[in-house]
Image (cartoon, rainbow, N blue to C red):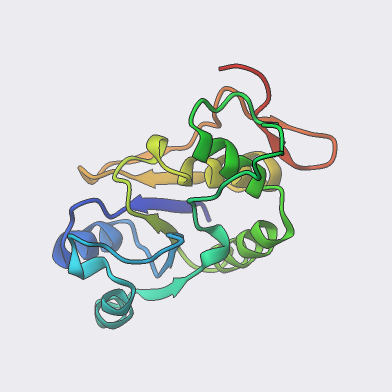
Length: 176
């Protein structure tokens, strides 16, 4: 089964539940490092733990896949294809044991059910879900589809700068 991704954006629980249900999602894995929202109470972790199961969708938060990573100040940027520092930092995070363990659990679940990873950004190409998808497709051979805000889904095509190394890890070297 493909792995799905979704960004909640401004959706309230009714709209988000409708998108997830239309996508056949049985388990939502929240990959926000800090699973809250100042403007949308329906996507607070505690709210999701309450209303998603009532809508027939399982919920799990996994901080290991969360964004908002930083490179140590003295560490060179190995993933120069990314021009946004937080994406370069997350790219480095995708090569950690912590990330691998989190992705393994998500993909194990996705082997038997329809699983979506969720973050707040509405569109996948401006979110760390893009990097999660690159790793899933290139390093794990798992297809990924993105549930779009308008209800469509889009097949993930790996980022142009993504390269699978001989060590089985994805890197985004060089300039964009």
